[in-house]
Image (cartoon, rainbow over all chains, first blue to last red):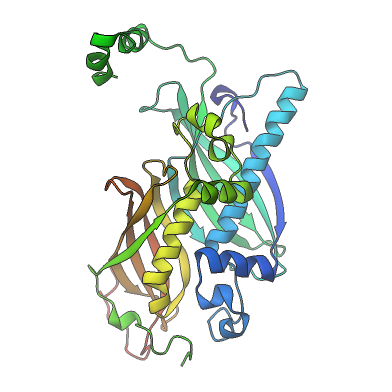
Length: 185
Length: 164
C-alpha cells in the first residue's frame, strides 16, 4: 500500500491481520481516553445494556489503524525486496463515516480488512493524490464490528511541477521579491 | 433502573442547541511519541527530522490521538454526566490542522439532534457537533458524533413526526 498513487489498484483487498482484545488493555485504553463505566469497570458494566465490559469503539479503531500502518511498512519492505522503489503515504485529512456495529468483549479476536474504493489527485496539494478506503473489522463469529470510510494521502510518482509553480518557488528565495511571491503560493 | 446512571441526566433532560465546554489539554512531545509508538508509528509522528520533511511540517500528534484526547475531554465534561449507552459512530471527521508539540487543544460539543430509537423504546440518540481548536483559536478537528442515551421513561409513546 505504500505504493505510488498511480500503482494503487481500485478494489484490491488488503488483509491487515487480527488482534486479540484482553480485559486488561480494554480497561487501560478506557481509563486513558474513554472512561465510561462499561469500558473501565467489569462489575458496573453488568448494569449496562451491554451486560459486561466492552472495548471503546475508538480503541478497536486505533488498533485497526496500527494494523494498517504495519501493512504499509510490510508492503514497503516487499517492494524493496523486489528491487522497486516504494511510494509515500501521507497523513489523513479525515474520515467520512464510522459505524460501530457489534461491541468487542474481552477475549474477542478482531480481524481487519482494507479496500481502496476510489482515488483522485488532490485539488489542494499538488503532487499528492487522495485515496478513499473502506476498512472493516469483524470478530471471530464473522460479525461486523465496525465499518469505516477513510481518506488518505498518497504521493504521485509522475508529478511534474508546472513551470509557473517552480518559478514562484524560485522567486520566494529572493530577499525582496520573496515575500511578494510567497503570497501567490 | 440502572444504579450507575440513575442520578445522571437522561434523554428527556437534554435539549438541541446545548453547548458543552469540553475544557482543554496540552499535548507534549512525550505524549505524541508514546501514542504514535503504540497506534500510529509513521516516522512523521515519531521523529522531528522526518516530521519537518513531511506534509505536517513538524512533529505533530496522530489524528487518532487528537480524537482520543478530545473524546477524553468529552467524557469528563459530558458523557460521564449523562446516562450514556455508548457511541454509535461518527461522520465527517476532518483533521483540519496538525496539532504540534506544545499546542493546547480544547473546544465545544453542541447538541445537534435528539431522537428516539424506533426499535428500542428505552434508547435515545444524541448527535453532537464536535469543534476542537488550538490555543490560537484555529480549528484542528471537527466531526459529528452519535451516542446512545437511556430514556428515563420509555413508556411515553413515540410521537409520530418527533423523529425527523
